[in-house]
Length: 270
Image (cartoon, rainbow, N blue to C red; front, top):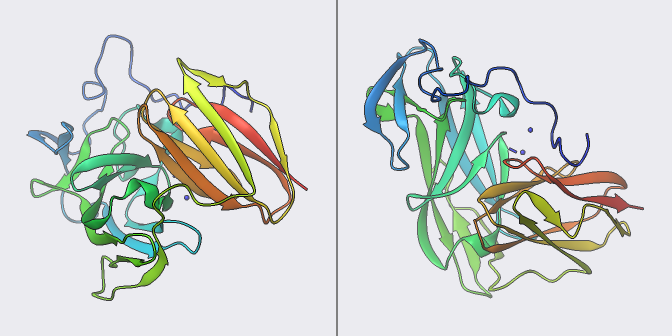
């Protein structure tokens, strides 16, 4: 997806649109749209724009053959700008937030996002995507945030999980949601503490075709991204999260975090 060098630079250099020290994001956001006093459920103010040419988003959730769901964020009159997050609000640009039953799961910096089954409790839920400007205000039309929602049902082990497209009433079914971390040939355990990677960033060598489990604990909410495989994983603060992928491509692939911009490891697939 997202989901945007060395170990400190992550996906690349930051843009130059960040606000000046001593000012808030909203003070630096310029005259794009109208900043409302109304807030979304996460405390972000709404930025109203005319309906004509306003950003739009459609959400589709498809069960992944290995684990969880693959989410597609189909946007219109909007572009993802991960390198300028935190800067001024520019027309039709920014990122997205994913929410499950009103609780934030992660930010998305591209049109594809992998949602692990372990992050969706058994039962019926509502998955929502909402579009934000770079200054973290929520794009809005007629006083309502620009967003889309789909029902999402996670079944117990041995039963299929379900999701609904945002645009059609069909209900695709897929693989069962496991109760714990999926089985893997190789497990890599990593942690992010006080802005540092533990153990120190290195290379993990695997054979092509092996299933690799990345078990990551971060002391702050973040998003994990595996370059080259377009796999992402939400990292709740203080909770272990696991991403399992099949190393079916040879090469050197960086595993990094988006918020802290850290390279956790490099997967060397031979």
